[in-house]
Length: 86
Image 1 (cartoon, one colour):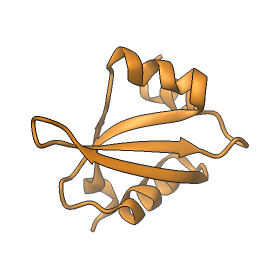
Image 2 (image 1 turned 30 degrees about the vertical axis):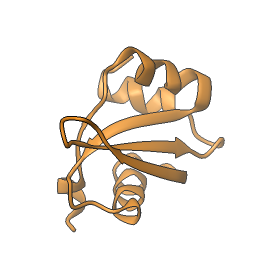
Image 3 (image 1 turned 90 degrees about the vertical axis):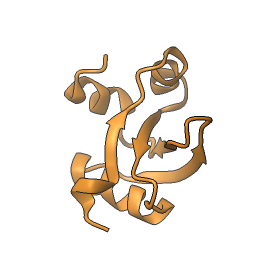
């Protein structure tokens, strides 16, 4: 899958934004065909960070959410600031 098409947009929910500081995690809505490997590669290439773990779930509206744990060498807050979230 093409890297540019994997990540659709970040989640701006209150819980998602709280995860940035608390757990060094970010939440993204991703393409329904994307796998954990696709999401990991896309985040690492787009933001030049290392990803420790990716969890994916489908919500009630049949959208796919990816919970991305950023390596502790990098800060999720820096990514969020660059994207204009925080």
